[in-house]
Image (tube, rainbow, N blue to C red):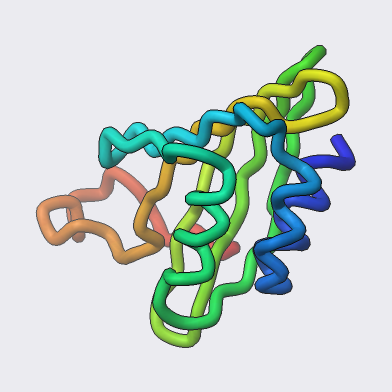
Length: 123
């Protein structure tokens, strides 16, 4: 969906005020990993502006089904790297709800190293 692509372009470009053009006035933005829901789209914009460092987003995949889309996005700074899996819901060409699931982009845990369960995956 074009709204999801635009959402990540805005995030990557640090043009956070533009998010308000994409989000419905009553949009819910939920971070299940930390049990948070943003009070308003404006607060989500303020959160992004206050987040430390400069971040860049690269969308790896988008899956669309009716009025929902799921994006898998690599979000990186000079020091950190995460994958964000986002579930977007839409109403009247606006994003009405987002669930953002954040995961560290890291190394194999030591308890699995050398056990033969997996091999190195090169992206």
